[in-house]
Length: 377
Image 1 (cartoon, one colour):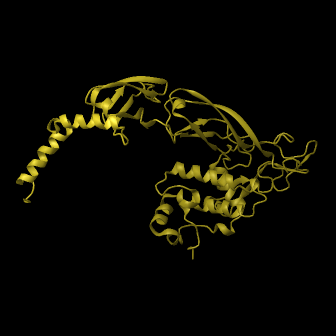
Image 2 (cartoon, helix red, strand yellow):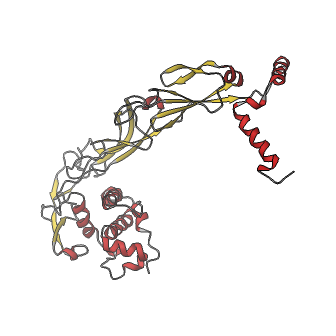
Image 3 (cartoon, one colour):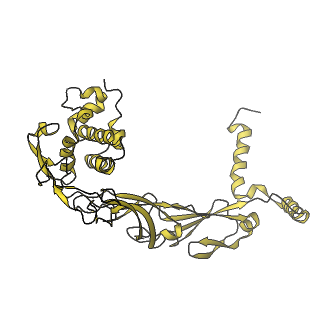
Protein backbone atom coordinates (compact mmCIF):
# COMPACT_ATOMS: atom_id res chain seq x y z
CA UNK A 1 0.00 0.00 0.00
CA UNK A 2 1.18 3.54 -0.75
CA UNK A 3 -1.43 5.55 1.12
CA UNK A 4 1.23 6.85 3.53
CA UNK A 5 3.14 8.60 0.74
CA UNK A 6 2.98 12.37 0.47
CA UNK A 7 1.47 13.95 -2.62
CA UNK A 8 4.24 14.35 -5.22
CA UNK A 9 3.17 17.91 -6.06
CA UNK A 10 3.37 18.76 -2.36
CA UNK A 11 6.84 17.19 -2.12
CA UNK A 12 8.15 19.48 -4.88
CA UNK A 13 6.00 22.46 -3.81
CA UNK A 14 4.47 22.95 -7.26
CA UNK A 15 0.89 23.27 -8.49
CA UNK A 16 -0.83 20.50 -10.38
CA UNK A 17 -0.63 22.61 -13.55
CA UNK A 18 3.15 23.13 -13.25
CA UNK A 19 5.14 22.81 -16.48
CA UNK A 20 8.21 20.65 -17.03
CA UNK A 21 10.67 23.51 -16.43
CA UNK A 22 9.03 24.47 -13.12
CA UNK A 23 9.03 20.84 -11.94
CA UNK A 24 12.70 20.47 -12.86
CA UNK A 25 13.61 23.74 -11.15
CA UNK A 26 11.69 22.82 -7.97
CA UNK A 27 13.29 19.38 -7.84
CA UNK A 28 16.69 20.99 -8.20
CA UNK A 29 16.01 23.22 -5.20
CA UNK A 30 14.72 20.32 -3.09
CA UNK A 31 17.60 18.03 -4.04
CA UNK A 32 20.22 20.67 -3.28
CA UNK A 33 18.52 21.53 0.01
CA UNK A 34 18.52 17.92 1.22
CA UNK A 35 21.75 16.84 -0.47
CA UNK A 36 23.63 14.52 1.95
CA UNK A 37 26.83 16.53 1.60
CA UNK A 38 25.04 19.53 3.08
CA UNK A 39 23.11 17.63 5.75
CA UNK A 40 25.55 15.25 7.38
CA UNK A 41 24.07 15.97 10.81
CA UNK A 42 20.44 15.66 9.66
CA UNK A 43 19.19 12.05 9.61
CA UNK A 44 15.93 13.08 7.94
CA UNK A 45 17.67 14.60 4.91
CA UNK A 46 18.30 11.22 3.28
CA UNK A 47 14.59 10.37 3.26
CA UNK A 48 13.63 13.80 1.95
CA UNK A 49 16.31 13.57 -0.76
CA UNK A 50 14.96 10.21 -1.95
CA UNK A 51 11.37 11.45 -1.69
CA UNK A 52 12.13 14.39 -3.97
CA UNK A 53 13.84 12.10 -6.50
CA UNK A 54 10.82 9.77 -6.51
CA UNK A 55 8.43 12.67 -7.06
CA UNK A 56 10.56 14.01 -9.90
CA UNK A 57 10.78 10.62 -11.62
CA UNK A 58 6.96 10.50 -11.82
CA UNK A 59 6.13 14.14 -12.57
CA UNK A 60 8.85 14.50 -15.22
CA UNK A 61 7.50 11.51 -17.16
CA UNK A 62 4.30 12.49 -19.07
CA UNK A 63 2.87 8.95 -19.02
CA UNK A 64 3.53 8.36 -15.32
CA UNK A 65 2.27 11.83 -14.45
CA UNK A 66 -0.97 11.19 -16.30
CA UNK A 67 -1.49 7.94 -14.38
CA UNK A 68 -0.67 9.65 -11.11
CA UNK A 69 -3.05 12.56 -11.78
CA UNK A 70 -5.86 10.13 -12.57
CA UNK A 71 -5.35 7.37 -10.00
CA UNK A 72 -2.88 8.70 -7.44
CA UNK A 73 -0.11 6.51 -6.04
CA UNK A 74 -2.13 3.35 -6.73
CA UNK A 75 -2.00 4.07 -10.46
CA UNK A 76 1.80 3.71 -10.53
CA UNK A 77 1.87 0.02 -9.62
CA UNK A 78 3.69 -1.80 -12.42
CA UNK A 79 4.49 1.45 -14.22
CA UNK A 80 8.25 1.04 -13.99
CA UNK A 81 8.51 2.72 -10.58
CA UNK A 82 11.39 1.94 -8.24
CA UNK A 83 11.36 1.59 -4.49
CA UNK A 84 13.29 4.69 -3.44
CA UNK A 85 13.22 3.68 0.21
CA UNK A 86 15.77 0.96 -0.63
CA UNK A 87 17.63 2.81 -3.39
CA UNK A 88 21.19 3.87 -2.75
CA UNK A 89 22.42 7.42 -3.18
CA UNK A 90 24.65 6.30 -6.03
CA UNK A 91 21.61 5.50 -8.16
CA UNK A 92 19.87 8.76 -7.36
CA UNK A 93 23.06 10.69 -8.09
CA UNK A 94 23.06 9.31 -11.64
CA UNK A 95 19.82 11.21 -12.26
CA UNK A 96 20.85 14.13 -10.06
CA UNK A 97 24.11 14.78 -11.92
CA UNK A 98 22.50 14.33 -15.31
CA UNK A 99 19.93 17.03 -14.54
CA UNK A 100 22.15 19.53 -12.76
CA UNK A 101 25.24 19.73 -14.88
CA UNK A 102 27.12 16.52 -14.11
CA UNK A 103 26.65 15.35 -17.68
CA UNK A 104 26.78 11.79 -16.35
CA UNK A 105 30.31 12.33 -15.12
CA UNK A 106 31.60 12.83 -11.65
CA UNK A 107 33.55 16.00 -12.25
CA UNK A 108 30.85 18.06 -13.92
CA UNK A 109 30.34 21.61 -12.82
CA UNK A 110 27.23 22.04 -10.70
CA UNK A 111 25.51 25.42 -10.54
CA UNK A 112 25.00 26.84 -7.05
CA UNK A 113 21.63 27.29 -5.35
CA UNK A 114 19.51 30.38 -5.96
CA UNK A 115 18.51 32.56 -3.01
CA UNK A 116 15.41 34.65 -2.35
CA UNK A 117 15.04 37.84 -0.34
CA UNK A 118 12.16 40.28 0.23
CA UNK A 119 12.71 43.97 -0.46
CA UNK A 120 10.31 46.54 1.02
CA UNK A 121 9.74 49.73 -0.99
CA UNK A 122 7.66 52.85 -0.46
CA UNK A 123 5.56 54.36 -3.26
CA UNK A 124 8.09 57.19 -3.37
CA UNK A 125 10.79 54.56 -4.10
CA UNK A 126 8.64 53.07 -6.88
CA UNK A 127 8.35 56.50 -8.51
CA UNK A 128 12.04 56.51 -9.44
CA UNK A 129 15.01 54.24 -9.97
CA UNK A 130 16.50 53.45 -6.57
CA UNK A 131 19.50 51.59 -5.25
CA UNK A 132 18.67 49.44 -2.25
CA UNK A 133 21.26 48.10 0.20
CA UNK A 134 20.54 44.48 1.13
CA UNK A 135 22.06 42.37 3.87
CA UNK A 136 21.51 38.61 3.82
CA UNK A 137 23.17 35.34 4.77
CA UNK A 138 24.40 32.74 2.30
CA UNK A 139 26.75 29.78 2.23
CA UNK A 140 30.15 30.83 0.95
CA UNK A 141 33.62 29.37 0.59
CA UNK A 142 35.44 28.73 3.83
CA UNK A 143 38.32 31.19 4.01
CA UNK A 144 40.48 28.78 6.00
CA UNK A 145 40.51 26.01 3.38
CA UNK A 146 39.49 28.10 0.32
CA UNK A 147 36.45 25.88 -0.12
CA UNK A 148 38.44 22.64 -0.47
CA UNK A 149 37.36 21.18 2.87
CA UNK A 150 40.86 20.06 3.87
CA UNK A 151 42.82 21.50 6.77
CA UNK A 152 45.51 23.97 5.63
CA UNK A 153 48.75 22.15 4.85
CA UNK A 154 47.15 18.70 4.83
CA UNK A 155 47.25 16.35 1.87
CA UNK A 156 44.52 14.51 0.02
CA UNK A 157 44.73 10.84 -0.91
CA UNK A 158 43.50 9.24 -4.10
CA UNK A 159 40.02 7.81 -3.81
CA UNK A 160 40.29 3.99 -3.71
CA UNK A 161 36.85 3.48 -5.26
CA UNK A 162 37.39 5.40 -8.51
CA UNK A 163 41.20 5.45 -8.52
CA UNK A 164 41.19 9.23 -8.79
CA UNK A 165 38.89 9.50 -11.81
CA UNK A 166 35.87 10.74 -9.82
CA UNK A 167 33.63 8.46 -11.89
CA UNK A 168 32.31 4.93 -11.64
CA UNK A 169 30.06 2.74 -13.76
CA UNK A 170 26.62 1.89 -12.42
CA UNK A 171 24.01 -0.57 -13.62
CA UNK A 172 21.37 -0.57 -10.88
CA UNK A 173 18.42 1.59 -9.91
CA UNK A 174 17.78 4.23 -12.56
CA UNK A 175 20.78 2.97 -14.48
CA UNK A 176 18.97 -0.31 -15.21
CA UNK A 177 16.64 1.65 -17.46
CA UNK A 178 19.55 3.12 -19.38
CA UNK A 179 22.18 0.36 -19.36
CA UNK A 180 25.62 0.92 -17.86
CA UNK A 181 26.29 4.60 -17.34
CA UNK A 182 29.07 6.65 -15.81
CA UNK A 183 28.11 8.47 -12.60
CA UNK A 184 29.78 10.39 -9.82
CA UNK A 185 31.86 8.29 -7.50
CA UNK A 186 29.83 7.76 -4.29
CA UNK A 187 32.93 7.70 -2.09
CA UNK A 188 34.59 10.97 -3.11
CA UNK A 189 31.46 12.61 -4.62
CA UNK A 190 33.27 13.11 -7.92
CA UNK A 191 36.38 14.78 -6.48
CA UNK A 192 38.75 11.92 -7.22
CA UNK A 193 40.43 12.39 -3.84
CA UNK A 194 39.54 12.10 -0.18
CA UNK A 195 40.28 14.57 2.59
CA UNK A 196 42.70 13.16 5.12
CA UNK A 197 42.36 15.93 7.70
CA UNK A 198 39.13 17.95 7.49
CA UNK A 199 39.28 21.70 7.93
CA UNK A 200 38.44 22.40 11.60
CA UNK A 201 36.62 25.61 10.78
CA UNK A 202 34.09 24.19 8.30
CA UNK A 203 34.42 20.52 9.36
CA UNK A 204 35.32 19.50 5.85
CA UNK A 205 32.28 21.04 4.21
CA UNK A 206 34.21 23.81 2.43
CA UNK A 207 31.26 26.16 3.03
CA UNK A 208 30.23 28.42 5.91
CA UNK A 209 27.31 30.83 6.42
CA UNK A 210 28.41 34.41 5.80
CA UNK A 211 26.75 37.80 5.82
CA UNK A 212 26.64 39.55 2.46
CA UNK A 213 25.96 43.28 1.90
CA UNK A 214 24.92 44.21 -1.62
CA UNK A 215 23.57 47.25 -3.46
CA UNK A 216 20.75 46.34 -5.86
CA UNK A 217 19.21 48.68 -8.44
CA UNK A 218 15.39 48.59 -8.47
CA UNK A 219 13.73 49.99 -11.63
CA UNK A 220 11.02 52.64 -11.35
CA UNK A 221 7.45 51.41 -11.72
CA UNK A 222 8.04 47.92 -10.35
CA UNK A 223 4.99 46.15 -8.90
CA UNK A 224 4.54 44.15 -5.71
CA UNK A 225 5.39 40.48 -6.23
CA UNK A 226 7.79 41.13 -9.10
CA UNK A 227 11.44 40.18 -8.63
CA UNK A 228 14.79 41.62 -9.60
CA UNK A 229 17.34 38.92 -10.37
CA UNK A 230 20.97 39.56 -9.50
CA UNK A 231 23.09 37.03 -11.34
CA UNK A 232 25.90 35.29 -9.51
CA UNK A 233 24.90 36.39 -6.01
CA UNK A 234 23.54 33.03 -4.87
CA UNK A 235 25.52 30.20 -3.29
CA UNK A 236 28.69 28.82 -4.91
CA UNK A 237 28.43 25.83 -7.21
CA UNK A 238 29.95 22.43 -6.68
CA UNK A 239 33.23 21.35 -8.26
CA UNK A 240 33.97 24.83 -9.54
CA UNK A 241 30.49 25.42 -10.92
CA UNK A 242 29.01 28.92 -11.20
CA UNK A 243 27.13 30.61 -8.41
CA UNK A 244 23.35 30.68 -8.34
CA UNK A 245 21.35 33.90 -8.53
CA UNK A 246 19.69 36.16 -5.96
CA UNK A 247 15.99 36.86 -6.52
CA UNK A 248 14.77 40.07 -4.83
CA UNK A 249 10.98 39.92 -4.46
CA UNK A 250 9.27 43.29 -4.06
CA UNK A 251 6.87 44.23 -1.27
CA UNK A 252 5.33 47.72 -1.44
CA UNK A 253 4.43 49.41 1.81
CA UNK A 254 1.01 50.97 2.35
CA UNK A 255 0.80 54.73 1.83
CA UNK A 256 -1.23 56.98 4.17
CA UNK A 257 -2.90 58.80 1.26
CA UNK A 258 -2.57 56.82 -1.97
CA UNK A 259 -3.84 53.57 -3.42
CA UNK A 260 -2.15 52.22 -6.51
CA UNK A 261 -4.24 51.28 -9.57
CA UNK A 262 -1.71 50.06 -12.13
CA UNK A 263 0.31 53.24 -12.86
CA UNK A 264 -2.30 55.65 -11.43
CA UNK A 265 -2.51 56.85 -7.84
CA UNK A 266 -5.90 57.40 -6.20
CA UNK A 267 -6.28 59.88 -3.33
CA UNK A 268 -9.56 60.28 -1.43
CA UNK A 269 -9.75 63.95 -0.42
CA UNK A 270 -12.31 65.08 2.20
CA UNK A 271 -13.92 68.49 1.66
CA UNK A 272 -16.64 70.32 3.57
CA UNK A 273 -20.17 70.69 2.19
CA UNK A 274 -19.64 74.46 1.98
CA UNK A 275 -16.52 73.95 -0.17
CA UNK A 276 -18.50 71.60 -2.37
CA UNK A 277 -21.43 73.98 -2.67
CA UNK A 278 -19.55 77.26 -3.09
CA UNK A 279 -16.35 76.01 -4.73
CA UNK A 280 -12.83 76.25 -3.34
CA UNK A 281 -9.14 75.74 -3.95
CA UNK A 282 -7.70 72.87 -1.88
CA UNK A 283 -4.21 71.50 -1.41
CA UNK A 284 -3.72 67.81 -2.09
CA UNK A 285 -0.68 65.59 -1.46
CA UNK A 286 1.44 64.22 -4.31
CA UNK A 287 4.51 62.01 -4.22
CA UNK A 288 6.64 65.06 -4.95
CA UNK A 289 5.01 67.56 -2.59
CA UNK A 290 1.79 69.58 -2.62
CA UNK A 291 -0.49 70.57 -5.48
CA UNK A 292 -3.64 72.71 -5.76
CA UNK A 293 -6.97 71.48 -7.08
CA UNK A 294 -9.86 73.79 -7.94
CA UNK A 295 -13.23 72.53 -6.71
CA UNK A 296 -16.03 74.09 -8.79
CA UNK A 297 -19.36 75.13 -7.29
CA UNK A 298 -21.86 72.34 -6.83
CA UNK A 299 -19.29 69.53 -6.76
CA UNK A 300 -20.86 66.23 -5.68
CA UNK A 301 -19.28 63.67 -3.36
CA UNK A 302 -17.30 61.08 -5.34
CA UNK A 303 -16.29 63.46 -8.13
CA UNK A 304 -12.84 62.59 -9.51
CA UNK A 305 -10.29 65.18 -10.61
CA UNK A 306 -7.41 63.96 -12.78
CA UNK A 307 -3.90 65.37 -12.32
CA UNK A 308 -1.99 64.25 -15.39
CA UNK A 309 1.52 62.86 -15.02
CA UNK A 310 1.59 62.75 -11.21
CA UNK A 311 1.23 58.96 -10.95
CA UNK A 312 3.88 56.26 -11.24
CA UNK A 313 6.08 55.50 -14.25
CA UNK A 314 5.38 52.41 -16.33
CA UNK A 315 8.18 49.89 -15.82
CA UNK A 316 8.50 49.32 -19.58
CA UNK A 317 7.55 52.54 -21.35
CA UNK A 318 8.55 54.87 -18.46
CA UNK A 319 5.44 56.92 -19.22
CA UNK A 320 3.89 58.23 -16.01
CA UNK A 321 0.34 57.57 -14.92
CA UNK A 322 -1.99 60.14 -13.34
CA UNK A 323 -3.07 61.07 -9.84
CA UNK A 324 -6.83 60.76 -9.37
CA UNK A 325 -8.28 62.91 -6.60
CA UNK A 326 -11.70 61.71 -5.48
CA UNK A 327 -13.47 64.24 -3.26
CA UNK A 328 -15.60 63.05 -0.36
CA UNK A 329 -18.07 65.62 0.97
CA UNK A 330 -18.19 65.44 4.75
CA UNK A 331 -21.26 66.32 6.79
CA UNK A 332 -20.45 68.09 10.06
CA UNK A 333 -21.41 66.17 13.18
CA UNK A 334 -21.15 69.09 15.62
CA UNK A 335 -22.43 72.59 14.93
CA UNK A 336 -22.16 75.76 16.96
CA UNK A 337 -25.41 77.69 17.61
CA UNK A 338 -24.44 80.28 15.03
CA UNK A 339 -23.71 77.58 12.42
CA UNK A 340 -26.99 75.80 13.17
CA UNK A 341 -28.89 79.06 12.87
CA UNK A 342 -27.33 79.85 9.52
CA UNK A 343 -28.12 76.37 8.22
CA UNK A 344 -31.73 76.58 9.38
CA UNK A 345 -32.07 79.93 7.62
CA UNK A 346 -30.62 78.35 4.49
CA UNK A 347 -33.00 75.41 4.82
CA UNK A 348 -35.97 77.78 4.89
CA UNK A 349 -34.92 79.12 1.49
CA UNK A 350 -33.98 75.73 0.04
CA UNK A 351 -35.86 74.48 -2.99
CA UNK A 352 -35.44 70.72 -2.75
CA UNK A 353 -36.89 70.13 -6.21
CA UNK A 354 -33.88 71.66 -7.96
CA UNK A 355 -31.13 69.85 -6.09
CA UNK A 356 -29.09 67.82 -8.66
CA UNK A 357 -29.41 64.40 -7.09
CA UNK A 358 -32.70 64.78 -5.24
CA UNK A 359 -34.78 66.04 -8.19
CA UNK A 360 -34.76 62.72 -10.00
CA UNK A 361 -35.32 60.83 -6.77
CA UNK A 362 -38.39 62.83 -5.76
CA UNK A 363 -39.84 62.59 -9.25
CA UNK A 364 -39.56 58.80 -9.07
CA UNK A 365 -40.97 58.79 -5.55
CA UNK A 366 -43.98 60.81 -6.72
CA UNK A 367 -44.64 58.35 -9.56
CA UNK A 368 -44.26 55.42 -7.17
CA UNK A 369 -46.93 56.63 -4.78
CA UNK A 370 -49.33 57.74 -7.55
CA UNK A 371 -49.62 54.18 -8.81
CA UNK A 372 -46.88 53.87 -11.44
CA UNK A 373 -44.67 51.79 -9.22
CA UNK A 374 -47.05 50.23 -6.64
CA UNK A 375 -50.63 49.37 -5.94
CA UNK A 376 -50.47 50.92 -2.49
CA UNK A 377 -52.86 53.75 -1.77
